[in-house]
Length: 114
Image (cartoon, rainbow, N blue to C red):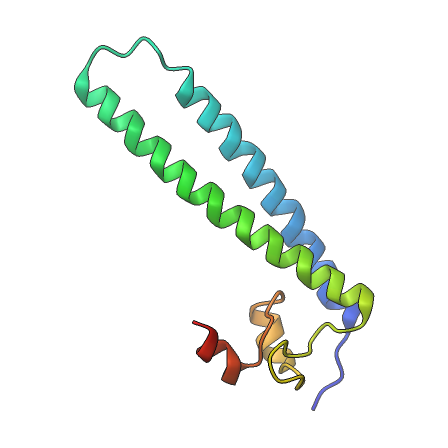
């Protein structure tokens, strides 16, 4: 099995973290702008704003969860446990990590965790 290049994965994770933090800040700004829309008289406009708000909220939650996963992976790099399945203790295939750098589990246990 191929040896992990921790630097490669750390750089990718840091890039993901930066992008996620930017997305989260933008979503929060957009949600604040939606919340300030207080001059709505039309029911259709109110429904559209409500829908936009729910959509932004779901996206924000997803982005925050992914950021938590990225931060968890970065902490695993620092403590020397990156690339090790949290369920079995086996090594996670580097190809899986290239697709999902913040993977916690090997393929076998990822399927069980779903």
